[in-house]
Image 1: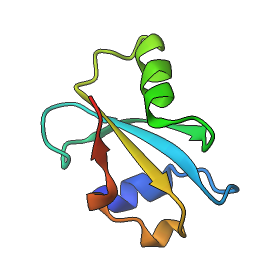
Image 2 (image 1 turned 60 degrees about the vertical axis):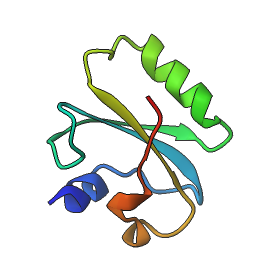
Image 3 (image 1 turned 120 degrees about the horizontal axis):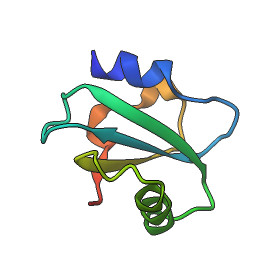
Image 4 (image 1 turned 90 degrees about the vertical axis):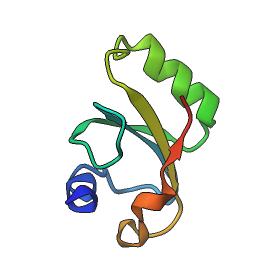
Length: 83
């Protein structure tokens, strides 16, 4: 399940942060390929720039999630497509 796989990879310890999830294919249900966590002071555009400069462009899409609640409150619909 998407959410279970995502929660396995969340690094706890901050109240609010950006998480970048990149998937192969065009559908959010596709296999989770990569996760990165950035400090919340990085805006979405900065997260996107860092990701693109990391050489990971082979991935199809980038999703940014701003988590301000407990991870259990995260819902797949909280993903925002920014690329």
